[in-house]
Amino acid sequence: MLQTPCVLFAGGRSSRMGTDKSLLPFGGFETLAEFQYVRLSKIFSHIYISCKDKSKFPFNAEFIEDSKISNTYAPTLGFISAFESLGESFFALSVDSPFVDEEIIKKLLKMDRKNDDATVAKTIEGIEPLCGVYHPSLHLHFQKMLMKKQHKLGLLLKNSKTQFINFKEKEKFLNLNHPYEYKKALRIINSTLL
Image (cartoon, rainbow, N blue to C red; front, side):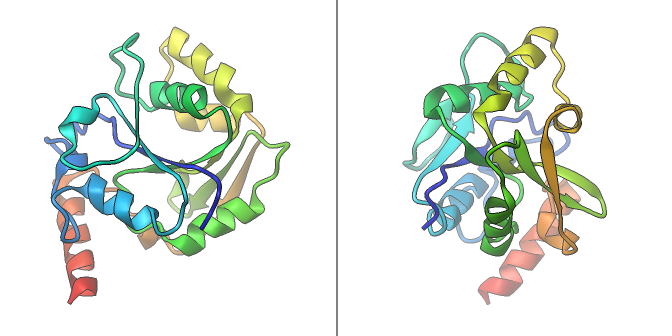
């Protein structure tokens, strides 16, 4: 079991999906969030779900609720709340990335260096900001971003001491942003459950 805590980000607006994607059924579970929580619990000793309101989830887990100081749906506030709750580095993963596997996670943690601000996955499609290790050295930067209402994670990472780790298998980084991507992911997961 990996000792680095994992924070599963599930507080987004899901505007492109048209419904809260963290609550969509997936992989034999009532919600995508629970599927991810159970799956990651076999890899990490500590999993936390970053969200706006934990009462929306129909299962028990450890939650980090966003501070109510802002109504932003960008992950900026989630990072601030996670740093304030945990006080240490953590592995960040988006709830809508159900195929990021243990091999990818372990490689990112192995390549991570203490003097970096972050170690983040990158594919031919670009960087995957919500798949990587984040260090407390970025806490203040996230606070500044929130004050300025600037929420582009990619810009923060490019202007910080970030190590980008290349992965060839882009299909494992499928994000369920749109209904057609959710349907594709269902076909993939259902074929593996047969």
